[in-house]
Length: 86
Image (cartoon, rainbow, N blue to C red):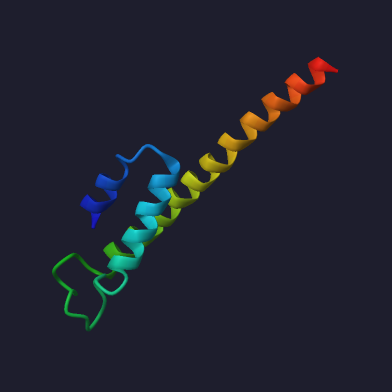
């Protein structure tokens, strides 16, 4: 699980990173180690599953904020140009 998080960190584009993290969450949803599941000892323990989900959630939020702030920079620059023209 830790390897998956490290590999996904290599994606630099925020939209692609969000898509990839969402896809990873959907695909690994039933394969996370849990008590009584067939994957209990293979990929780690419950603590590893929690850390995987939390880290994925944190990185998703960072990418979302980054995506939102990129759009506002263009809007503020455009507003400045419009004010200068007036």
